[in-house]
Length: 222
Image 1: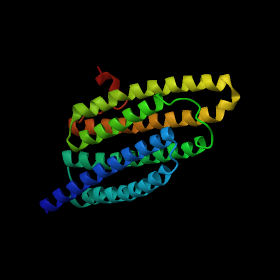
Image 2: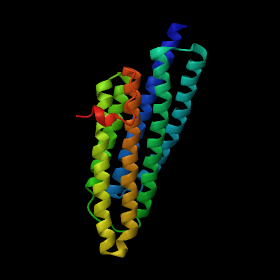
Image 3: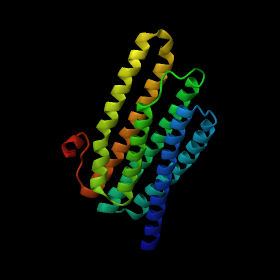
Image 4: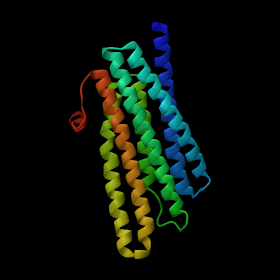
């Protein structure tokens, strides 16, 4: 029975790793679509979203079954609860990548507004935050989880910078407004992806250390 429990936990971890990789690929595809104006990547992102949704259901089923049948305590229970919450965050990250693609479709109908620098940088940081957050979960690295939380301010600041820059474009010429608004939304979606990675980091920190750093993560950042 114990062996079966360990096998189910292993399967759970593998599925979460797979979800993480898919969500990161979706972010990358969405940004390449934006930068290189490759409309064909839309279907790739949509197909990956379908896979993500299927794995999400499987993870929840495994986790809830283990909680009900095994009635785990202490560390194992915190692990399973964290897995359920992380599963939801990863699914939302995939949804946000889809939102970026939908904005891309609007942008591809017009000429580029400006060279893209800030948004790809935001995407790279957000992707790494997701990667590191899952690494911290799988390997129970509280310090790495804490570092993920500390990256959130960097993304927030970039989002504000991009908004101010795009606002300047809108004020210069009303013809820029539609494209600038779409880029503003994309920046916001990336900021929300970073928020979900931060949620994962906070959950992992609690799972490992038993301390709730939600709303207080700045106190742990140097």
